[in-house]
Each structure stands twice: as structure tokens, then as C-alpha cells.
Image (tube, rainbow, N blue to C red; front, side, top):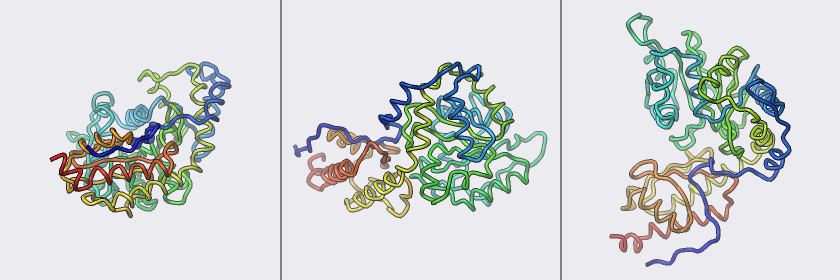
Length: 358
């Protein structure tokens, strides 16, 4: 058996959802002023919603328990049952939200494969249904930036705005799954308001790279948010003294975006280290945010086998296919942890290690 590095701590690269609240967040939660949010009386929730709307240049915002609920609320608000929702074929709303787009919203996903997960108007326009009464109509177009299952790819502002302009000319709203939109904004060197201004609604997560323990936000017009609040209650998302959670979200909004460049630098550093390992397939130039997905078919091992051996070395990562692994950097993983991950994968993929497994 090969020797395994020992360490007292786990390097968790499965997702940025594993981030733990900072001391400042914990203090804010302990000291939060609260009320009943279903009555609209929680002052901390109200401050969070007002601040989110301000940052995104919108009229209003709504605090929701999860990003999946936020996306579902947007779909229900914009599209009627029986309508189609156009999205990329590896979109989170299609692959990882329990089929709620159909099971609860009653809509049909119309999925389009796109290079690096980035749809263009040329790809979207042919999928818009003609105005014929016996055809399911296109009710909504949904984009995702950064794109989770496409290695954190980011929509160029011009491409996203062209889709929004074309959709609006056709009378179709556009929703952005911006779970990691602050990562996308960091990669583009723009503000979130600048890159999302033409979308009809935006969902973003407080609980991923921003580090809050729970919660996401919907932003949009006052009319949209009024309708979204009704849908949130219908789905069981009415929270009471939610200010305890919103307090951490306020800290995350103000303090965490400045940390994201470090996460992105660590992701690129990790990508460069992995590309030096024989059998791993990865283009470091495509790693622009904090997510990387790499192929391992040429290592002679499956992704599940490699992730299992990494876990034995206290390095956690997830397979996303038989021969694909995803790693996500975040503020709870420092450069030393990245070095440990590279060293562990190097050892596991070494020819002597592979031959022992065979």
C-alpha cells in the first residue's frame, strides 16, 4: 500500500455550499433584530431585501430559503402550466431541481446543448414556438451564469443582452439563474447590476461562494416580487423570525464579494497543477471562476474510484460522470489545501499506484 499524507483537517472541494459562516456572520446572527417576516415585520429581512435590490439596481427583492425555490418561483411567476421554458441542456433547473419545472410549475423544459453552456440568440431563436394554439408556447427563457455543470463558464455581457433583446422583442421574459453571479461579475470585471440589467428577474445565492449558511434572493420589479411573495408562501417558503438568517446574508453581501478573486486564483492554480498529471484532461484557460471539471478517462480509473481514494486522504471532490470530476474552490480552502489536493491526485494517478489497483 502507498503511504497516504496525514492531516488533521479535511480539504473540501465538493462545492462552495460547504462554506461555514464567518465570525462576523455568527455575531450578526446572534444579535439580529427579528420580527415575523410573513407579516413583513422582520426588520433584518427587510434590510437584506432592500440592500439586494439596491446592489442589483432593481425595485425590489425577496429572501427565499434556497436557490432552487427561487428559480421555481420565477418559473411559476413568468410561465403558465403547459408552456415551455428554454434552457441549456445541463442547466441546474433541468438537472438538479428534482423536475420541479414540470412537477410543480407544470412547464416543459426545452433544452439546447451549447458550447461551454453559453447559449446564443442564434441557438435560442429557432426553439421559440410559433403562435399556434395547438403548440406549447414558449413562456420563459432561462440562462445560468456562472454555469455550474459547464465548469463555471460565464456569459459575456453582449451575448446575454442579445438574448434578452431578442426575447423581449418576441414578448418573452428572461430569467437568470445567477446562483454564482458574483463570481461571474468578478470574472468579467463588472458589477452585478451591469451584467444583469436586461434580465426580467435574477436569482442569486447567499449560501455558496458568499458564505452565508442559508438563503437566496430573487430580484426584479415590484410587481414581480409581489407575485413571487405569494408563490413563496404557496411553496411553504414563508419564514417567521428569518432575520437570524438574513443577518448573515447582509454580512455576506457586503464582505464576501471582495474575497472571490482569491477563490478564482486558487481555481486556476489548481487547474494548472492538475494539468501536469498524466491522464487528466483539462484546459486551464477555461477556468475563469471557482469551478473546474476535468476528465480522467486516460488515467485508467473512473471518477468514482479516484474520488474515493482522494477521500481516504481527506480531500473531498465529486464525480460528475463516469470519467469527470468537479472541484470548487471557496474561502474555506487555502493555497496549502490546494497543494494537498494536487499532491494527492498526483500520487493516486502515478503509474505505480494505478498498477497496484489493477
